[in-house]
Length: 459
Image (cartoon, rainbow, N blue to C red; front, side, top):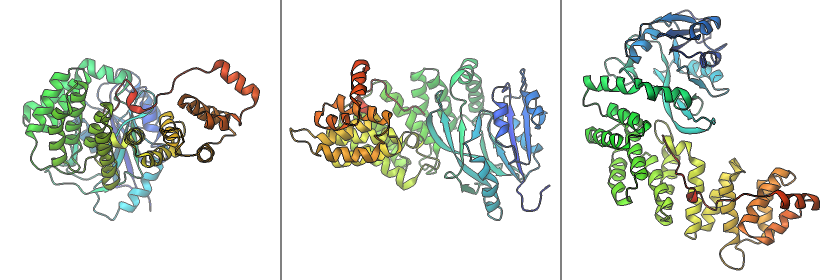
């Protein structure tokens, strides 16, 4: 290996095809961090190759054989670094995270770690996080360490020996945008993934993970009956004992529960799937989250609160390393839903603490602010919290010298119908401002998250 004294040589590798819109960004994070950049092109017809070469990457051409692992292993064979960072063209490290990589790998140098687990976040079209998980995209450049499977490749030793993995999920996060927008629609239309999964199942007909991936394709195409059938078959083929961090199997249970909810199944029909999932993967928070969310939408607030509390407890105790994809990316919504359930079941103190936790991280959550103020006002004629005390708490959460914050709080108070507290807020406005607000204000505020008409939470 070629290496400067004290430096870690990292080879950035990727396989590409028609990625001219992504390739520049995909290579940019590695500049000044990695030792070499290797791009393996599998038949681009656009300017991908020219852009990669202009940025200094070593470009190789590989004839596509309907096998992602084969192409990735070819890229690995060209790498000369001590470590390999293998991100896709539609992935990049979160801002500031790539710079941490050399230091992390330097610390791992004398250890047995062969791979590094990083956080992985799927972004929607608006740049929000729609799902979160864990991926191993950084690993040592060692003989017989590579990828298997035509699609949904598995990194590991070719003889099946388990890898030694270092957990860097708290320091490294990868952002992925390939499951949204035109790129994802193109993948669905051309059937590429579906065809490769079917080929993989021809050679490994009992592979319950591939059955789960097959369902993903049918689910994305809107064929819910086929998706549900393959999910159930995947579950029936699972071994009785799974690795506690088996994210793929957890996703199979999770998606099946989501399909059942979308199809209008009753909770008694969903419970057996939940119970089997919780028995085989007891540390997975997503199952509790989905059942709690379903019960909340059904207005069974007491039962919903039980499961949502359980989801948060599991997430806090066991973390999100290779588990809790939905829980980890929907924490704010879970806090809001749980606060609403607590409010509806008379647990105002818990509702208040949950809302304050949300507002400290996102002060412009109208759901959290509304529930908080509703709990302060109480149900009777006399408020549970005096208006002046409520005002003091709001002053800790908001900068009421800011017009934006004053308007946000005033809107919540107005929609709630708490005139005493509203009067305190109005004292912060000039008379001209209040006159203008009354003339232009419109809109409605939803009292609780479960009143939204559209259910959230895809994987």
